[in-house]
Length: 167
Image 1 (tube, helix red, strand yellow):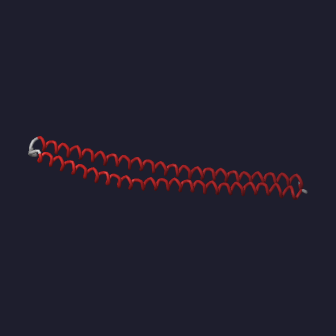
Image 2 (cartoon, helix red, strand yellow; image 1 turned 90 degrees about the vertical axis):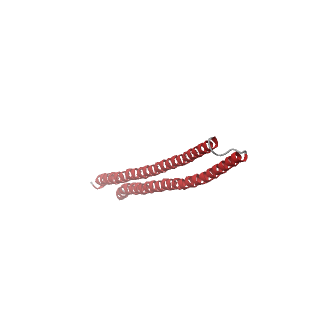
Image 3 (cartoon, rainbow, N blue to C red; image 1 turned 60 degrees about the horizontal axis):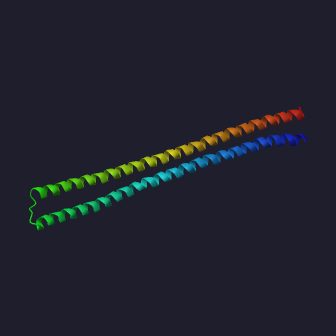
């Protein structure tokens, strides 16, 4: 009976250590997988900046086309009614051009703000990925310490059992 007790005591420490080491590997792998997921999300967010650029280009194209049509129609209406483009009509067209440029600048500014927001969101995702990876590593370290503790406890218990039975 004594050999069985000593062997079982030793085995329990080894089994506990192996289980804790397995949990450590799983925790570390989970942390890395979570980081990869956050990094992928950040990459997708960065790709959205291309969409913002395309949207701006399209909006500016439509905006400029509409302004050119409006200016042409205004000019035709002035000339059709017999008014020359000197003086007030010229000032109105110039003011319309200034306002159109201001609005185009606002579209570009808003696009830059959206891209900055996306940059910040992507950076936050990468940061969360770093935290997830470090959390996994910290958990893995705690499991390794638990494995060492199991080995030490198992060794101590085995020595005590051996001393008790073989004296």
